[in-house]
Amino acid sequence: MRTVKQVANASGVSIRALHHYDHIGLLKPEVGENGYRYYGQAEVLRLQHILFYRELGLSLAEIARILDDPSFDTRAALLDLRRRVEDEITQRHDLARTIDRTLASLDAGKAVDDHRLFYGVSAEKQAQWEAEVVARFGDAGDAAVRGTKTRMKGLSPAQLLDFKTEIDAIHRGIAALIKAGGTSSSDAAQGLIERHYHWVCRSWLPDAHAYASLGRMYVDHADFRSMYDALHPHMAIFMEAAMACHARTMLRRGVR
Image (cartoon, rainbow, N blue to C red; front, side, top):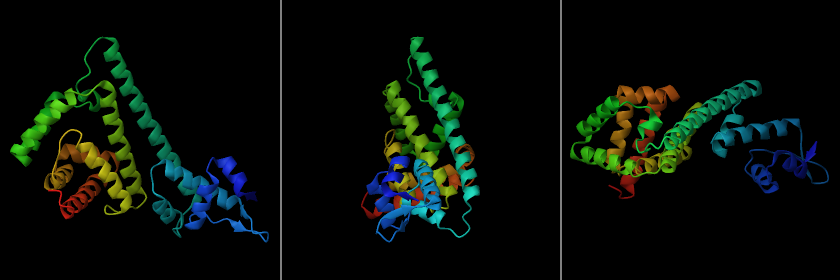
C-alpha cells in the first residue's frame, strides 16, 4: 500500500490532483483506520491508465466513462494504449520529417511560402479543391480562397509549422475521442471543434452556415472523406456532425 505522498512522488501527479481525482470519484483510494488514504496495486494501475488517456487528450469525464465500463479489460486497454502511442510516435516522425524538409529549404536559400510543403498536395489537386470551394460557396468561396492564399504566403516557416502542428493535434484528439466512444455534441468534442473553428479562421472567416457546409464537404468530397477516414473510419461523419452542432451554437450566440 502506498500513501498519497508516495504515489505523488512516483507518478509526478500532484497531491492536489490526486485529491481531486478522489473527490470526483475517478480514483478512490482506501481509507485506513487512521484516516489516511492508501493506494493499492489496482489504484496505481488505474492511475497509469488515467495518465495515459490524459496524454492522449481525453477529458476526465471521458476517462471515467471508459474505466468504469463493466466490460473494461485492463490488458485489452493496455494493448489499445500501446497502439495509440505507436500512432503518436509515427505522427511525431512525420512532423520531424516536415521540419527536416523546411530546414533543407531554408539551408538551400529557398523561400518557404507554400503550405503544400506541409500537406504534400499537388498543384493540380489544390486547384481542384479550390474549384470545389468556389462551386459550393460562390463569391464567398472565391474570396475565401484568395484570402487564404494571401494569408498563407505571409506566414513565416515557424508559423506554417505551428499551423500544421495545431491541426494534427486537433485531429489526434478527435480520433481518440471517437475511439473512446465520445459523441459529437459532447463538451470534449465541442472543445476540439472550437479549436478547429479557430484554426480555420487563421486562413478564412466562415460564418455559421459556411462552417457547417465545410463539414458537409468533408463527407461529400471524396478526397476530404478519404483523408479524414484514414485517421479514423468514422471521422468525416463525426466532424460533420460536430461542426453542425458548433454552427448551431454560433447562431444561438448571434454569430452569423
